[in-house]
Image (tube, rainbow, N blue to C red):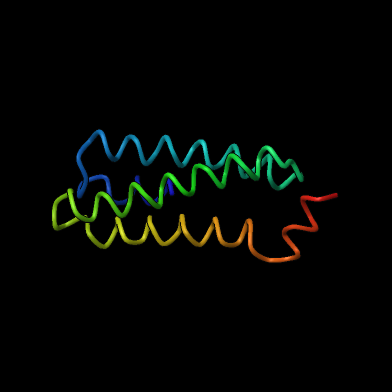
Length: 97
Protein backbone atom coordinates (compact mmCIF):
# COMPACT_ATOMS: atom_id res chain seq x y z
CA UNK A 1 0.00 0.00 0.00
CA UNK A 2 2.84 2.38 0.75
CA UNK A 3 4.39 1.65 -2.64
CA UNK A 4 1.07 2.40 -4.32
CA UNK A 5 0.86 5.64 -2.33
CA UNK A 6 4.33 6.55 -3.58
CA UNK A 7 3.42 5.85 -7.22
CA UNK A 8 0.19 7.87 -7.18
CA UNK A 9 1.66 10.72 -5.11
CA UNK A 10 1.09 13.27 -7.89
CA UNK A 11 -2.58 12.37 -8.16
CA UNK A 12 -3.21 12.81 -4.46
CA UNK A 13 -3.03 15.62 -2.00
CA UNK A 14 0.38 15.70 -0.27
CA UNK A 15 -1.17 14.81 3.10
CA UNK A 16 -2.97 11.81 1.62
CA UNK A 17 0.15 10.60 -0.18
CA UNK A 18 2.18 10.89 3.03
CA UNK A 19 -0.58 9.09 4.93
CA UNK A 20 -0.65 6.25 2.42
CA UNK A 21 3.14 5.91 2.61
CA UNK A 22 3.11 5.88 6.43
CA UNK A 23 0.30 3.32 6.36
CA UNK A 24 2.40 1.21 4.01
CA UNK A 25 5.40 1.35 6.35
CA UNK A 26 3.22 0.29 9.29
CA UNK A 27 1.78 -2.54 7.19
CA UNK A 28 5.32 -3.64 6.34
CA UNK A 29 6.22 -3.88 10.04
CA UNK A 30 2.99 -5.70 10.86
CA UNK A 31 3.54 -8.06 7.93
CA UNK A 32 6.92 -9.05 9.31
CA UNK A 33 5.33 -9.82 12.68
CA UNK A 34 2.48 -11.75 11.08
CA UNK A 35 4.89 -13.71 8.91
CA UNK A 36 6.64 -14.86 12.09
CA UNK A 37 3.30 -16.20 13.38
CA UNK A 38 2.42 -13.39 15.76
CA UNK A 39 -1.31 -13.05 16.39
CA UNK A 40 -0.74 -9.41 17.34
CA UNK A 41 0.91 -8.85 13.95
CA UNK A 42 -2.07 -10.49 12.25
CA UNK A 43 -4.48 -8.28 14.15
CA UNK A 44 -2.44 -5.14 13.43
CA UNK A 45 -2.13 -5.84 9.72
CA UNK A 46 -5.85 -6.64 9.59
CA UNK A 47 -6.67 -3.36 11.32
CA UNK A 48 -4.36 -1.35 9.06
CA UNK A 49 -5.70 -3.06 5.93
CA UNK A 50 -9.26 -2.32 7.03
CA UNK A 51 -8.32 1.33 7.63
CA UNK A 52 -6.77 1.44 4.16
CA UNK A 53 -9.88 -0.09 2.59
CA UNK A 54 -12.21 2.39 4.30
CA UNK A 55 -9.94 5.33 3.49
CA UNK A 56 -9.77 4.22 -0.15
CA UNK A 57 -13.55 4.10 -0.44
CA UNK A 58 -13.94 7.47 1.25
CA UNK A 59 -11.32 9.05 -1.01
CA UNK A 60 -13.13 7.75 -4.11
CA UNK A 61 -15.97 10.11 -3.25
CA UNK A 62 -14.05 13.01 -1.71
CA UNK A 63 -10.82 13.07 -3.70
CA UNK A 64 -10.05 14.38 -7.16
CA UNK A 65 -11.32 12.42 -10.14
CA UNK A 66 -7.75 11.55 -11.13
CA UNK A 67 -7.37 9.47 -7.95
CA UNK A 68 -10.46 7.27 -8.33
CA UNK A 69 -8.65 4.25 -9.81
CA UNK A 70 -5.82 4.42 -7.28
CA UNK A 71 -8.27 4.74 -4.41
CA UNK A 72 -10.25 1.75 -5.64
CA UNK A 73 -7.05 -0.29 -5.89
CA UNK A 74 -6.11 0.64 -2.32
CA UNK A 75 -9.61 -0.31 -1.12
CA UNK A 76 -9.51 -3.64 -2.97
CA UNK A 77 -6.04 -4.47 -1.63
CA UNK A 78 -7.15 -3.73 1.91
CA UNK A 79 -10.33 -5.77 1.65
CA UNK A 80 -8.46 -8.66 0.02
CA UNK A 81 -5.82 -8.61 2.74
CA UNK A 82 -8.41 -8.76 5.50
CA UNK A 83 -10.19 -11.62 3.72
CA UNK A 84 -6.98 -13.62 3.26
CA UNK A 85 -5.90 -13.11 6.87
CA UNK A 86 -9.14 -14.09 8.56
CA UNK A 87 -11.26 -16.30 6.27
CA UNK A 88 -9.22 -19.32 5.05
CA UNK A 89 -8.90 -22.29 7.40
CA UNK A 90 -5.14 -22.52 6.68
CA UNK A 91 -4.70 -18.99 7.99
CA UNK A 92 -6.64 -19.79 11.13
CA UNK A 93 -4.53 -22.92 11.74
CA UNK A 94 -1.25 -21.03 11.16
CA UNK A 95 -2.04 -18.40 13.76
CA UNK A 96 -3.62 -20.85 16.21
CA UNK A 97 -0.30 -22.65 16.75
